[in-house]
Image: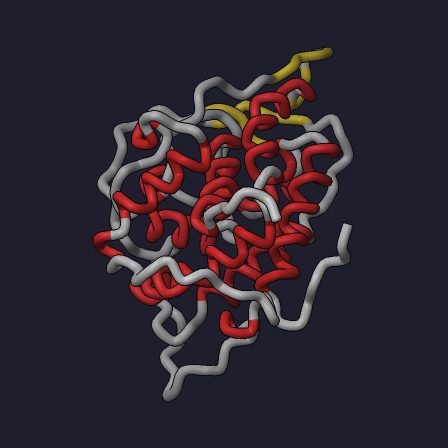
Amino acid sequence: MGKRRSGTGWLAALVLLVAAVGIGVYLARRQSTPEPYVLAPVPATQPEPVSAAPEPTHPIQDALPGAEIQDTGPLPELQDSDAAVLAELARLFGLEEPAGVFVAGHVIPRIVVTVDNLPRRRIVQRILPVRPAPGTLQVEEADGRLWLADANSGRYEAFVAMLESADPDAVAAAYVRAYPLFQSAYAELGYPDAYFNDRLVEVIEHLLAAPVPVRPLELEPAQRGYRYLDPGLESASVGHKLMFRLSAGQVDRVHAALREFRARVVAHERPESH
């Protein structure tokens, strides 16, 4: 067993990768005044009301069958969890000042909102749990046409390495223990009769199903940066656009980490031993 990792940390690593890739309708970073955080779905649609809560597809109590979940004491209330989460992230990522990387308020709700929006076509900067990554999109020009530079993937290598470095067994165990906080945030988001673990598994499967576009990827100028010339790529989800930014090798490594985690939070599925 490797060093104990945080379930919050694993999800934050994925979200950190998302933010580093520069989520948005366009491919260039936007310059705008930060908006105050609002705990609301994006888009602002609510699920259909139901008479009774459905059963979860992937019950969290069935995750990690046979594993012993370490009891480290009672969890804080969601509204009081930021300090503990930031301290944990500081240990995980070796940060002296975690607030320099992560937004200090509503950490778990921000992670939950971001995960929930990965299969959608847009996400807004104000909900991300991390501060914008440095650097700008790298574009190449040839024969009057614009292309996404292959070297651009190097900007995200540290985040891919962060994602794959976590011990998946310890991560999943910590996630299961902290799950009530994620579920509480998901209910507050507008899904009181749904289950965050079901949504997380669904989002992981969505990321694993991202198409592999033929490279190089051609761009065209947009109002505030660039967009993909191929309308199919431009209309892709936030999560799929994330994958388009990575190299083929990085995508394989992200997929491996996602499969490892999914196998541990879906009942009766266990990865083969290595």
